[in-house]
Length: 85
Image (cartoon, rainbow, N blue to C red):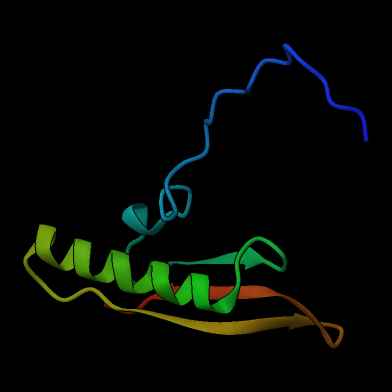
C-alpha cells in the first residue's frame, strides 16, 4: 500500500447522528422508510427514542414513534417509522 502526502482532508458535512432523518417535520400519521443499509434497527430505535424525548419537551406533550420491517417480494426494503402521537 502506497502512503501519500498532501492530500487534503475533506470537510465533514454529515449531519449529526439523528440530523438527517425527518422526525422534526413529521405530523401524526406520517411515516418514512429508512432503506436497508442506511441504518440498523438499533440505530432507528435510538433515533426514535432521541426524537420522542426531544419533541415531547419542546411541544409539551408526548410524542411517540413506532417501527416495522418493510418487505417487498420477500426481500427486506428497510425500516418504516410512523409518528403515532
